[in-house]
Image (cartoon, rainbow, N blue to C red; front, side, top):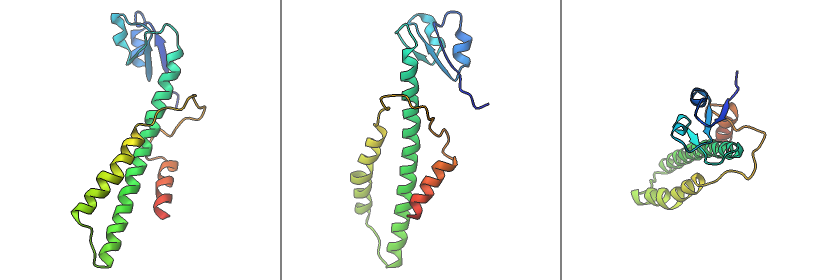
Length: 143
């Protein structure tokens, strides 16, 4: 339970295993290489490390973007509530300026982050509804 299976093969006699594995890497450019979700033209298992680094980077980036958008929404909600308390409101142009000039570049740059140079022994959190992720968001909202 809780284990992840990775399979490397040439795709000829191990098509079923490549499809059944959580991560399947075909080490061939032949027609049988369509059996695996990922294909490498290199004849050794070195690309599996690159694949795991890229996958972990994608997962961490997705969780970070979720946390960023959740915090941005909470901050904007509190800002609007505070402005309503003092009988003020932001104009449509102010909302547009915040979204296009401040938030959009940050979100794009966050999404463009690449993987770390080496594979870490610690796995990232795989779900958004895990205690560390929610505690981080709620802790930042409390601040």
